[in-house]
Image 1 (tube, rainbow over the protein chains, first blue to last red):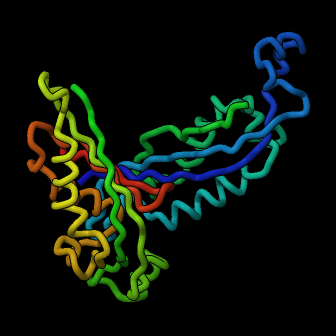
Image 2 (image 1 turned 180 degrees about the vertical axis):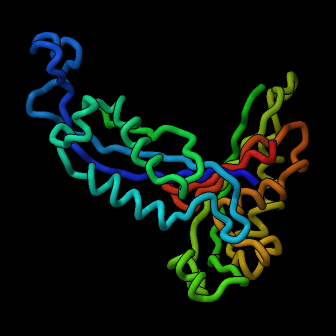
Length: 129
Length: 136
Protein backbone atom coordinates (compact mmCIF):
# COMPACT_ATOMS: atom_id res chain seq x y z
CA UNK A 1 0.00 0.00 0.00
CA UNK A 2 1.55 3.26 -1.10
CA UNK A 3 0.80 6.32 1.02
CA UNK A 4 2.14 9.85 1.36
CA UNK A 5 3.21 11.37 4.67
CA UNK A 6 3.48 15.14 4.97
CA UNK A 7 5.08 17.10 7.75
CA UNK A 8 5.26 20.86 8.27
CA UNK A 9 8.05 22.72 10.02
CA UNK A 10 8.23 26.40 10.87
CA UNK A 11 11.15 28.77 11.10
CA UNK A 12 11.62 32.53 11.21
CA UNK A 13 14.50 34.26 9.52
CA UNK A 14 15.61 37.54 8.03
CA UNK A 15 17.07 38.09 4.59
CA UNK A 16 17.79 40.61 1.90
CA UNK A 17 17.48 39.98 -1.82
CA UNK A 18 20.59 41.32 -3.44
CA UNK A 19 23.15 40.16 -5.98
CA UNK A 20 26.64 41.46 -6.61
CA UNK A 21 26.06 40.84 -10.29
CA UNK A 22 24.02 44.05 -10.48
CA UNK A 23 24.67 47.59 -9.34
CA UNK A 24 22.57 49.26 -6.63
CA UNK A 25 20.03 50.74 -9.05
CA UNK A 26 19.51 47.41 -10.82
CA UNK A 27 19.16 45.56 -7.51
CA UNK A 28 16.53 48.04 -6.38
CA UNK A 29 14.72 47.84 -9.70
CA UNK A 30 14.56 44.04 -9.63
CA UNK A 31 14.09 43.27 -5.94
CA UNK A 32 12.20 46.38 -4.84
CA UNK A 33 11.57 46.64 -1.10
CA UNK A 34 13.15 43.21 -0.63
CA UNK A 35 16.46 44.91 -1.43
CA UNK A 36 16.30 47.07 1.73
CA UNK A 37 19.93 47.04 2.95
CA UNK A 38 18.85 46.43 6.54
CA UNK A 39 16.96 43.28 5.62
CA UNK A 40 13.49 42.11 6.60
CA UNK A 41 12.03 38.87 7.93
CA UNK A 42 9.43 36.20 7.40
CA UNK A 43 7.81 33.29 9.15
CA UNK A 44 8.47 30.36 6.83
CA UNK A 45 6.60 27.07 6.61
CA UNK A 46 8.40 24.09 5.12
CA UNK A 47 6.16 21.24 4.01
CA UNK A 48 7.84 17.99 3.03
CA UNK A 49 6.06 14.93 1.66
CA UNK A 50 7.44 11.41 1.63
CA UNK A 51 5.93 8.65 -0.48
CA UNK A 52 6.39 4.93 -0.29
CA UNK A 53 5.01 1.59 0.74
CA UNK A 54 3.61 1.52 4.25
CA UNK A 55 5.86 -0.84 6.19
CA UNK A 56 3.80 -3.80 7.37
CA UNK A 57 5.56 -3.96 10.74
CA UNK A 58 5.56 -0.27 11.64
CA UNK A 59 2.61 1.07 9.66
CA UNK A 60 4.84 3.92 8.52
CA UNK A 61 6.16 5.39 5.29
CA UNK A 62 9.03 6.82 7.28
CA UNK A 63 9.78 7.05 10.98
CA UNK A 64 8.43 10.38 12.26
CA UNK A 65 10.70 10.58 15.30
CA UNK A 66 13.76 10.13 13.06
CA UNK A 67 12.43 12.65 10.57
CA UNK A 68 11.77 15.25 13.28
CA UNK A 69 15.24 14.72 14.74
CA UNK A 70 16.75 15.14 11.29
CA UNK A 71 14.72 18.31 10.66
CA UNK A 72 15.68 19.74 14.03
CA UNK A 73 19.39 19.33 13.31
CA UNK A 74 19.48 20.02 9.60
CA UNK A 75 16.67 22.50 9.08
CA UNK A 76 15.52 24.30 12.22
CA UNK A 77 18.88 24.60 13.97
CA UNK A 78 20.41 25.94 10.77
CA UNK A 79 17.71 28.40 9.72
CA UNK A 80 15.51 29.42 12.65
CA UNK A 81 16.15 32.93 13.98
CA UNK A 82 19.06 33.51 11.63
CA UNK A 83 19.89 36.05 8.98
CA UNK A 84 19.91 33.89 5.84
CA UNK A 85 22.39 36.20 4.12
CA UNK A 86 25.02 35.36 6.74
CA UNK A 87 24.86 31.61 6.09
CA UNK A 88 27.48 30.33 3.66
CA UNK A 89 25.33 27.46 2.42
CA UNK A 90 22.51 29.87 1.67
CA UNK A 91 24.74 32.47 0.05
CA UNK A 92 25.80 29.91 -2.51
CA UNK A 93 22.22 30.34 -3.63
CA UNK A 94 20.94 33.91 -3.56
CA UNK A 95 18.97 33.88 -0.34
CA UNK A 96 15.79 34.16 -2.35
CA UNK A 97 12.78 32.19 -1.19
CA UNK A 98 12.59 30.78 -4.69
CA UNK A 99 15.87 28.96 -4.24
CA UNK A 100 15.40 27.95 -0.60
CA UNK A 101 13.17 24.99 -1.52
CA UNK A 102 15.96 23.55 -3.69
CA UNK A 103 18.44 23.89 -0.83
CA UNK A 104 16.05 22.33 1.69
CA UNK A 105 15.16 19.54 -0.76
CA UNK A 106 18.87 18.72 -1.06
CA UNK A 107 19.16 18.59 2.72
CA UNK A 108 16.30 16.15 3.13
CA UNK A 109 17.42 14.04 0.18
CA UNK A 110 20.81 13.60 1.87
CA UNK A 111 18.94 11.52 4.43
CA UNK A 112 18.35 8.70 1.98
CA UNK A 113 17.88 5.76 2.09
CA UNK A 114 15.95 6.22 5.34
CA UNK A 115 13.56 8.39 3.38
CA UNK A 116 12.47 6.44 0.38
CA UNK A 117 11.17 9.10 -1.92
CA UNK A 118 10.69 12.81 -1.48
CA UNK A 119 7.85 13.80 -3.76
CA UNK A 120 7.16 17.47 -3.32
CA UNK A 121 9.54 20.37 -3.03
CA UNK A 122 9.59 22.06 0.31
CA UNK A 123 7.10 24.87 0.20
CA UNK A 124 7.41 28.23 1.74
CA UNK A 125 4.87 30.70 2.88
CA UNK A 126 5.88 34.25 3.34
CA UNK A 127 3.85 36.80 5.10
CA UNK A 128 3.68 39.59 2.62
CA UNK A 129 3.59 43.18 3.72
CA UNK B 1 -14.62 16.50 -13.84
CA UNK B 2 -14.92 18.18 -10.46
CA UNK B 3 -13.17 17.30 -7.22
CA UNK B 4 -15.22 17.82 -4.09
CA UNK B 5 -13.76 17.65 -0.58
CA UNK B 6 -15.67 17.14 2.63
CA UNK B 7 -14.16 17.42 6.10
CA UNK B 8 -15.06 15.52 9.22
CA UNK B 9 -13.47 15.31 12.64
CA UNK B 10 -13.00 12.59 15.20
CA UNK B 11 -11.08 12.31 18.46
CA UNK B 12 -9.51 9.00 19.32
CA UNK B 13 -6.95 7.32 21.52
CA UNK B 14 -4.24 5.01 20.22
CA UNK B 15 -0.76 3.68 20.77
CA UNK B 16 1.87 2.21 18.46
CA UNK B 17 2.87 -1.36 19.24
CA UNK B 18 3.95 -4.41 17.25
CA UNK B 19 3.14 -7.59 19.20
CA UNK B 20 5.84 -9.56 17.42
CA UNK B 21 8.58 -7.30 18.82
CA UNK B 22 10.06 -7.05 22.29
CA UNK B 23 9.04 -4.08 24.48
CA UNK B 24 12.55 -2.65 24.00
CA UNK B 25 12.24 -2.80 20.22
CA UNK B 26 8.79 -1.18 20.33
CA UNK B 27 10.15 1.65 22.45
CA UNK B 28 13.16 2.09 20.19
CA UNK B 29 11.08 2.34 17.01
CA UNK B 30 7.93 4.07 18.24
CA UNK B 31 9.31 6.20 21.10
CA UNK B 32 6.66 7.93 23.20
CA UNK B 33 3.92 6.65 20.87
CA UNK B 34 4.55 3.18 22.36
CA UNK B 35 3.14 4.16 25.77
CA UNK B 36 0.67 1.31 26.39
CA UNK B 37 -1.65 3.60 28.33
CA UNK B 38 -2.32 5.31 25.04
CA UNK B 39 -2.58 8.94 24.04
CA UNK B 40 -5.01 10.81 21.81
CA UNK B 41 -5.50 13.25 18.97
CA UNK B 42 -8.15 15.41 17.38
CA UNK B 43 -8.09 14.03 13.86
CA UNK B 44 -9.33 15.90 10.81
CA UNK B 45 -10.45 13.81 7.87
CA UNK B 46 -10.67 15.19 4.34
CA UNK B 47 -12.39 12.99 1.80
CA UNK B 48 -12.13 14.04 -1.84
CA UNK B 49 -14.41 12.54 -4.46
CA UNK B 50 -14.43 13.13 -8.19
CA UNK B 51 -17.23 13.04 -10.71
CA UNK B 52 -19.36 14.97 -13.11
CA UNK B 53 -21.68 17.70 -12.02
CA UNK B 54 -25.31 16.59 -12.30
CA UNK B 55 -27.11 19.05 -14.59
CA UNK B 56 -30.25 19.14 -12.56
CA UNK B 57 -28.91 19.27 -9.01
CA UNK B 58 -25.54 20.95 -9.69
CA UNK B 59 -23.97 18.35 -7.38
CA UNK B 60 -21.09 15.96 -7.88
CA UNK B 61 -22.48 14.22 -4.85
CA UNK B 62 -25.18 15.19 -2.42
CA UNK B 63 -23.20 16.80 0.42
CA UNK B 64 -25.72 15.81 3.03
CA UNK B 65 -25.55 12.23 1.82
CA UNK B 66 -21.73 12.33 1.86
CA UNK B 67 -21.78 13.75 5.38
CA UNK B 68 -24.10 10.94 6.47
CA UNK B 69 -21.83 8.31 4.88
CA UNK B 70 -18.75 9.73 6.65
CA UNK B 71 -20.66 9.78 9.91
CA UNK B 72 -21.93 6.21 9.51
CA UNK B 73 -18.79 4.57 8.12
CA UNK B 74 -16.05 6.46 9.97
CA UNK B 75 -16.95 8.99 12.65
CA UNK B 76 -19.44 6.80 14.53
CA UNK B 77 -16.83 4.02 14.61
CA UNK B 78 -13.71 6.07 15.44
CA UNK B 79 -14.88 9.08 17.46
CA UNK B 80 -14.20 8.91 21.19
CA UNK B 81 -12.88 5.38 20.80
CA UNK B 82 -9.58 3.67 21.44
CA UNK B 83 -8.47 2.66 17.96
CA UNK B 84 -6.28 -0.28 19.06
CA UNK B 85 -8.84 -1.73 21.46
CA UNK B 86 -12.18 -0.92 19.88
CA UNK B 87 -11.81 -0.71 16.10
CA UNK B 88 -11.48 -4.08 14.36
CA UNK B 89 -9.00 -3.16 11.61
CA UNK B 90 -6.43 -1.99 14.17
CA UNK B 91 -6.36 -5.24 16.15
CA UNK B 92 -3.57 -6.41 13.86
CA UNK B 93 -2.42 -3.15 12.27
CA UNK B 94 -0.61 -0.24 13.93
CA UNK B 95 -2.97 2.79 13.87
CA UNK B 96 -0.49 5.20 12.32
CA UNK B 97 -1.76 8.16 10.34
CA UNK B 98 -0.88 6.27 7.14
CA UNK B 99 -2.83 3.16 8.17
CA UNK B 100 -5.81 5.22 9.35
CA UNK B 101 -5.97 6.85 5.89
CA UNK B 102 -5.85 3.42 4.23
CA UNK B 103 -8.47 1.98 6.60
CA UNK B 104 -10.84 4.90 5.97
CA UNK B 105 -10.40 4.46 2.21
CA UNK B 106 -11.39 0.81 2.58
CA UNK B 107 -14.41 1.77 4.66
CA UNK B 108 -15.59 4.32 2.06
CA UNK B 109 -14.64 2.64 -1.22
CA UNK B 110 -17.77 1.92 -3.32
CA UNK B 111 -20.02 3.45 -0.67
CA UNK B 112 -20.41 6.89 -2.28
CA UNK B 113 -23.08 7.00 -5.00
CA UNK B 114 -22.40 8.76 -8.30
CA UNK B 115 -18.81 9.71 -7.41
CA UNK B 116 -15.38 8.13 -7.33
CA UNK B 117 -13.25 8.21 -4.22
CA UNK B 118 -10.14 10.21 -5.12
CA UNK B 119 -8.18 10.86 -1.95
CA UNK B 120 -8.36 10.30 1.78
CA UNK B 121 -6.31 12.74 3.82
CA UNK B 122 -6.01 12.33 7.58
CA UNK B 123 -4.52 15.04 9.75
CA UNK B 124 -3.24 13.75 13.09
CA UNK B 125 -2.42 17.38 13.85
CA UNK B 126 -2.19 20.47 11.66
CA UNK B 127 1.49 19.83 10.87
CA UNK B 128 1.23 16.10 10.16
CA UNK B 129 -0.98 14.35 7.64
CA UNK B 130 -1.14 11.28 5.41
CA UNK B 131 -2.69 10.91 1.95
CA UNK B 132 -3.94 7.71 0.34
CA UNK B 133 -5.18 7.49 -3.24
CA UNK B 134 -5.99 3.79 -3.36
CA UNK B 135 -3.87 1.34 -5.29
CA UNK B 136 -3.45 2.70 -8.80
